[in-house]
Length: 383
Image (cartoon, rainbow, N blue to C red; front, side, top):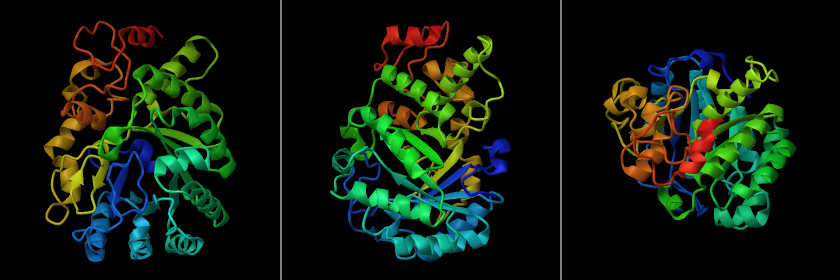
């Protein structure tokens, strides 16, 4: 199977039993000082990180979810660990689909990239938050990060490793998106993952875009997805699925589209905090997401599989009936459900409404997030 394609089991997975993605934060160590960093990373590794043996046990636990389970090794900068190649090989030998999200640092060399590829790495995800060295390096906090990231992307293409591009959306980066889209085409990426800022870690100091602007960006992303040579998804913005579904429905009604839209996210399982997604921190804590730091146990003492399937927090996050506010009343909450991470970061309650979504369900008269402009909400609902 082409490593850049979606595995067939994903389209029918029961996310109450199995996550689409298991993320393991190998370390929080990183030489960059990115302005949006969830982990508030530091140069030094934490002394209580999972050891190599504990990491192998974690990979064995992930394999218990089923065949070809997708595992993302993240950070910090996962290349700060000397055992990363061995961990990729160990996971690949177990039958896991191993992927990696390195930082744009001097540690990610062509030699290490080849070693990772030989060990069985299936995909690498690099971040570009600006379309130029000036904008990207300023956001990442280190001169040269842009050039190193582009060099790493080209090196991945040379060894035949599928490349994913990650981009943060906030007030400082949103105007760069069209130019980053062009870079994505030039670099031959298989997937562009567009992350809408959640105010955690250093990201609390950044200015998010408004709900109305987010809606316009998602509409533009839907247009890009229809013609781009790569796949496109959003992270911490599941209402992109609503935008795609509304757009597809309008096209069908107007006679200009087809209901057979294989790129429409609304026909595939959603992947949100605790529902299709589980995060294990560098110290072993089990979270619904790295952006929703409510631990349900630690892999050193608890079963990853059991906590994902049975922990009360995870069960509530998977239940659309548990959602509050306009997310609870929304007719799209089974295909979207809002960002539970953003709800938690802004209200302290992971089941509250996502303040980035401007959609107000017809007939809803309850409280609205303070970020929401009622006029913009009415415009979105009227579509």
